[in-house]
Image (cartoon, rainbow, N blue to C red; front, side, top):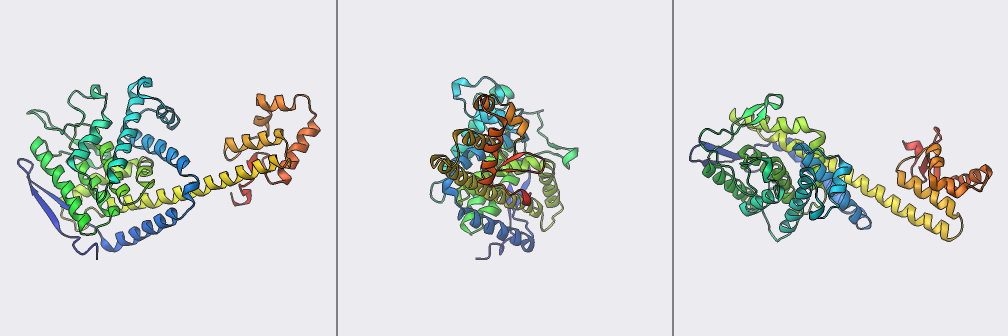
Length: 392
């Protein structure tokens, strides 16, 4: 099936007050098809990589990165390390709003992962409302109008506007609650129709994300809900890590991300044939980068696992002593490098060599270098042995 055969078709929704709202693919098929193929190829290479060996560790890292990314886009104040620590808390240990925000986003991601594994799943209004309810659990105080799981309906005299001049202008989305519900249900139905017609999740997910933000169905939290919704559509199609890691890509390209919503909206108003192409291309480029980064991360993790196994064998076979084993583990823990001065200042290192001579220290290090368990750079820094310094 040619997924672009009906690409110019427009679905028109007559609302009660907002006027006609249009859904369309609006894509430059020639350009998008190339990117789509590159992402699909990258995903295939990623799926056949040795994921099983490091799946648990990768999952943990992606969760932290994803929650940090989507939360920071919306004004979250925790660092990535603080986000990691907050996600380790139990509900009764949460102390402040910032911790509650990241805890809630993780729960929303967990929920969408669970429901999207059902056969032929596509998001429903109930799913969207539940995601918002989870994201705003115990956060009602952030905005008196923003009730968890409740769609926006502007009272007389209260006008919602979205955007700013820095990112392409200010947009007035639908204001009437009946219009918002109608458009959100129509968007979800449109996605289901496209899925039945064979339009890939890699096309549908960013389009749903784009139109969801233009409808702006909640008083607050629309960005977070939209990114979770996008991730669920991709997860249902077999993408297991990239849908959530994509939030970090959006954070890294935050100004382009925000500006494209207005760019596509204005292009549609001017009846450009490829009104949505730039946002979908941006999304696909992000997925390509994200999947390739995940692939590299998996390869690095597998290298570490193999290296740790080899290191243990060296100790068990008495090729190295406990002091040398401790040194290599510390170098490995530090990541890519550690200075000799930092190493020698550590209390555990000083305890190991307190009664030994400098000659013994030198001999221990030389043995580790000879066995290629550590390498010493030109700057004197120590690196794990599997890192090729010549390739850096």
